[in-house]
Image 1 (cartoon, rainbow over the protein chains, first blue to last red):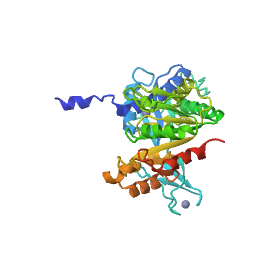
Image 2: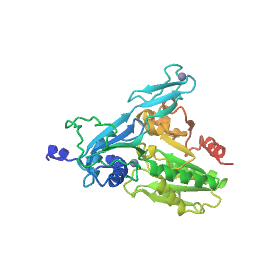
Image 3: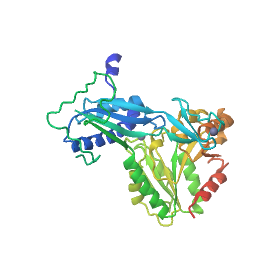
Image 4: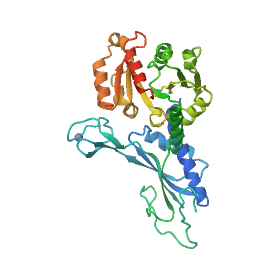
Length: 131
Length: 249
Ligand SMILES: [Zn+2]
Ligand SMILES: [Zn+2]
């Protein structure tokens, strides 16, 4: 079995299905904007993805390659702005950032865990650029 | 003029755009130049609109709607079967079951006089609000006070998809790891209630309930927590009390 050849071509697995669905929504929106601009070719697509959005960045990049094929965004640069979590402590009137990877949101001032999640759930089409 | 963004950015004929980007350099060009459209639209907008319509529909029927989420095998179906057998005699219940094609959960829950509809998601890994709306269309909702929505067994994908539910319930079973809440934070952070299920087998499996509770409290401090076993019946009263307490008046 030629493993290197197998891995050279990513396979659409169940792990990517979710991100493919998200990407289809994103590119449908891109296509509507492009149509409004005379179907100009899209050169860059920028998404904003929160750390709590529940999508895998790697799968999303893969999905872009697959889903953009044959659309106005084929061959475009794909960029993701990752949004770190920001939490607001109502007791201290303090907003604090949470570094990626840590999901226990302890207020640095009072130690409370119950802060309100203000950023980090984003799943947005941020910007498109056209040639 | 783009109808999507309402912008009016034709590039005048003959104008040459001078800013150039080096290949591979991922920096925006002119931030609001003629070729850039700042969209800032949620990719979940369509789902969220449908969820809002579902929510209004549940409210108009005076219905409590619960979105139940867990890994496969955490006991959603068993819990629902027991719940409709006991609590179902007190309040009229209905069930929407999201199934991959191979599953048979809807059949297991089926009872005479209990409206159940199976939503086959095909390859989709989560239920979305439009699937729920279509499912509701096929059910007789008269007198139904509690709508259980059994989501697809998956702790990742369903997290971001609002179905219009009143309360979101996440299950963690004693057959899983105590650290699961730490591994799937988005879904636990979105929970209104966490059910620690199958506690009757915790000892036998070496599952440390105290550690699991501590992890849930740290990851999901916003959520209520109930420990139960649908099989032994332990904790089921507390679960039924939760349902009674959140019934719309
Ligand atoms: Zn604080
Ligand atoms: Zn999904």
